[in-house]
Structures are given as structure tokens and as C-alpha cells.
Length: 352
View 1 (cartoon, rainbow, N blue to C red):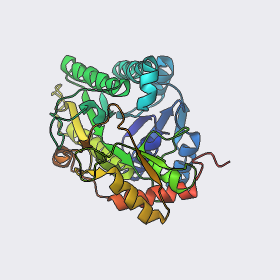
View 2 (view 1 turned 60 degrees about the vertical axis):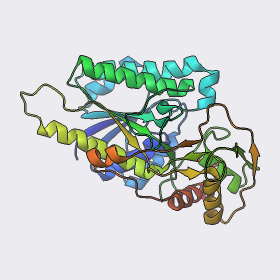
View 3 (view 1 turned 120 degrees about the horizontal axis):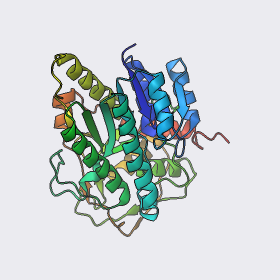
View 4 (view 1 turned 180 degrees about the vertical axis):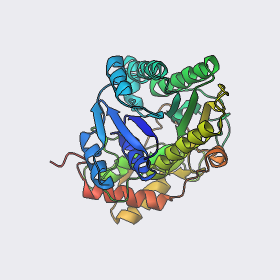
């Protein structure tokens, strides 16, 4: 086995897929998750897929004493920090919950990491930190501004990581800014399983296709885009998972290339976009999904949603140059794998 990794939020959608990629790359993992918006069943299925049990600890990133016990018991090389609430609408209704969980939880985690001298972190950030982009494609130097508490919580953690890297140059902090993760593991055994009505487009489309929801509401058809609907950079979750493995490999290379007398970090705070670099409109996604699933996707146009931007897609050049990573899977792949998961698991991880 290679180095041991703590994966916070590892039972969630992106976390569970990344656990498989980490195992395939030879990493030893410990998953820490409070299961507030994830399922223990996801980890059970990951264990089945990889053919061995995963050490799972139920706990919260705000619980310093629990974290300390885990750091005493394990010698971690790095932490991949997925744990966080992620529903934009809920963040507007419950901002204190989001700042407490996402920001306070990250601070507590960093304090414990510092205490046990584990200073390699990969943070699960988001393209929401860019707000309404001034130019496209969006690169890592683009201006950051947020339109909701969820985005603000991600940006706040980025600011904390930046300040931390300035104060102590032994930290290696990679902030991966995801664009729009979709898709599922090709086995159909794990996938996106939102609580209640989905907040994100792809699971909503797939639940319409499987008959759980009546029709899709498309917010706005008068944007200055190819067909008037919003354009986003959809990225397959398994490509995204590989991005985390590439980031870990990069941190290991940096660690091995440093001389023992060199106490300065060559990484510091490093933001990296993970996207395909291509935009796909809502209608293009709906059309592809209908073709792949052979199911009708009834939809209606409704008014634009406050805070939505017309187009948002990444420049992924930095990830390719530094990490040797680029997205490989197409929109058709994303729709096929989502439909495979949804049709096999119409009720998600809740079989009843």
C-alpha cells in the first residue's frame, strides 16, 4: 500500500467515487463522515466493488476530540476534505448551519492536522467561488465572488487556506474547484442520491426519466446561449475522482523531491479547476439523456432563477500542466452512467 489518506465526507457522492479511485491507485483510506447528507450503504457498496472492507468512522469535522483520536491511531500522509453541506437553496434559508458546518468544521480539522503535523490537504472547492464570470473560459486567476452562503462558505475556507499557507510555508494545500459533477460509477452500484427533490439538474432529469418526478422545470430560455438555456461544464464524477488521485500524486512528488533541510513548501495554496473546458446547454443535456435512456423527458420553461449565470465553463489547462490530468468522458458517457445507476436504483440507496 501507498500512503494512508483520511477522507472526510467519504460516504457522499464525490467522496464515494474517489474512495474507489484511491483504492485502485494503491492508497490506504479511512473514511470519516457524519452521514448527515450521505449514506452508510454507499460505503458498503464501495467495499463490495473493491473487494475489501473500508475503515469507516461516523463523526463530525467539528468534533476535535474524535478527530484527535483518529490522528493518534493512524499515520496519515494527507487529508481529502469533502465534508460539507452543498445545497444552495438550503444555504440561503440556513446560513448559520452552512458557516458552522463548512467553515467551522474546516477550521477544527486544520487545527487537529497542525497538532499532529499532517500538512497535506486537498480541499473540495467549487466553481461557485467565481460567481458570475467576467470572461470565459474561467481560469484560476479569475475574480472570485459569491452569490449565496454555500459559495461564500467555500470561498471563506479558501481564504483561510491562503492565509495559513502564508503563515506557515510547510503546508501543502490544493483547492480543487469542481465545475458540475454528474454521472455514476459504471457498475451502477454507487451514484448521486439526493435527499428529497434534487437540487441539481442531472439527478432531476434522471428521476423524471424513471418516473419519480413528473417533469423538469428549466429556469430561463432567454439567455445569450446556443439555445437560450444555461450552459454549464458538466464533468463525469469518475474523471473528478481521478483528479484527486492526480493531486495526491503531485503532493507525493513534491514531498519526495524536497531535501530534508528544505523546510519551505513548494506548493503553498494551489487552486486548480477540474472541468472539461466545454460548455453544454440544459437542452443539449436533456436531449442526450432522452436519447440514451429511450425515455421521454417532459419539460417546461419557467422564469430565470435568481443567482444563475448564463454560461460557466472551465479552463482546465492548469490541471493538465501541473497534475497531468484531463477529463476523458463525454456527455453521452455521463448520461449513460447516470441512467444505469438510476434505473438500477430508482430509490437511490433506500431500496424500499
